[in-house]
Length: 293
Image (cartoon, rainbow, N blue to C red; front, side, top):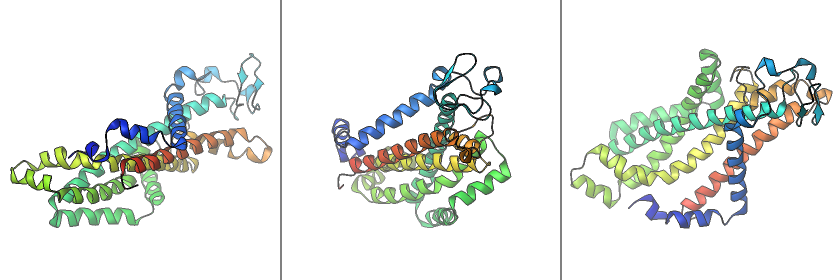
């Protein structure tokens, strides 16, 4: 029995999802940020990291100001004269890329570990779960900080660090679901037909783990974006040449006391909206995909 059959048809799931206005609003907000972020090279008024397009004379202009060339800065400029609207669009793009890629890689690796532990059981399950317990016993932010201190700054470095601190969540969750599915009659029947272990894992157990994996992936993506922003704010995440929303917030932190709030507050509001919308999507997906809820 597939996961779709267990919880209803795709059309029924979509109808139940749309019954909650907050979930629909969260979907619209998150989809809107994805469009803005990934379309930044075509939507942004300027490339804020192209020195030929930035003028230091336009630095620290409040929202709605015009430059000497006649360009309107709807969200103001930062200390280097960069258009905040453009910088935020590019920052949203980097934050989403880091969150999505790290989430997908952690999902793939954690799912593989969880499925193997649940199917093989015995000493294999014991060893893998002890590794997971060890991973989860350390604070997430501490592990990520140590890794970035060793590896240095960079998009690939922070994605690797986020995968390391996230995979254990997926492994434990998938193992729990796979243990339940592995005890069902259809899996026992597949074993009786002498189907290969990989075929049973991928063709029978994995499809029934997908709903739970989807919910956890949504939540972990929001956590990854938040964690990346925290690390970048601390100066250990992304380099200044590829700033995310967290680094934009850090760049404007020193200007808050002088009243130039827009440099930090506006990226902070965008980051908050992305994280809240992703969490609301995860909550609603959990309710829809679990018939008992």
